[in-house]
Length: 59
Image (cartoon, rainbow, N blue to C red; front, side):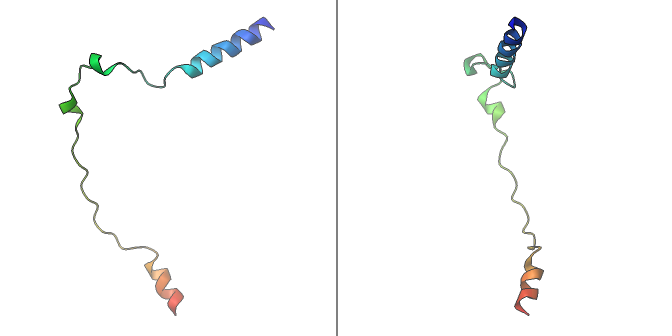
């Protein structure tokens, strides 16, 4: 019984840990200027693949 309780507590502690390591922002060695990546380019307009189906539906 004690080993089951110990396993349950161990599982809860493991689940409470963050998935990735985190630290306070004041201790961060990366400046905020380095964290800016810019804007994503606009995607080219692609034709709607369902436009053909819409034209078939009208017939």
